[in-house]
Image (cartoon, rainbow, N blue to C red):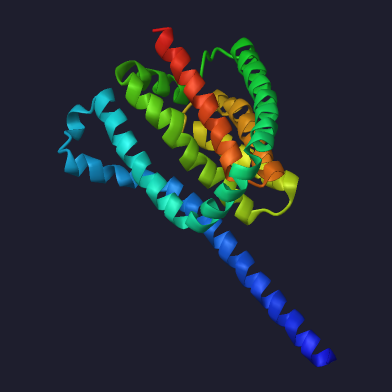
Length: 242
């Protein structure tokens, strides 16, 4: 009897290890695909015969939109089973989940605004290069950016930095800090101005609280909704102030 119970425990432990390894692989795969997603831009450039020697902001917006849609399809395919299960839970608990998400978003937004103001005071920077690029695209294709930046981008970023990182990190605070830091870093990575890396703090703080939302609600739809509300609000404000 003891031998049977021991074998059952060993089998259970072995299955748990396999699930854990698979979860980590999913997280790393989604992050890798996100980092290499720039190569997907080759597809719309070829399909729409875009002249890269005369690359306009409108061309860039169209290529980015096409690439983002492809990225969503790939990431949804990776997490399809998880998304299906979490959606069932979200339908039952969406009020509590969104209430939790709203509270964390407000805290993250306040920290983001305060740190942005501090950066503008202590440095000659008015905004990050990423923000400047986004604003220029909104001016050229406002409604397309409302869809891509307001809806599609939150889905891809939440599946990558919140769902993907949740597969890798089991510790609550390590998960939130890692998710927020990498999220913030990739918003400024590649800048030639060292001062721009200060923007890791405002971007990262928002990412941290999106991760906390995902952790506390145990549902990716909570953070996707909050991220979509955040981005959509900012894009609409930009459109209305042109």
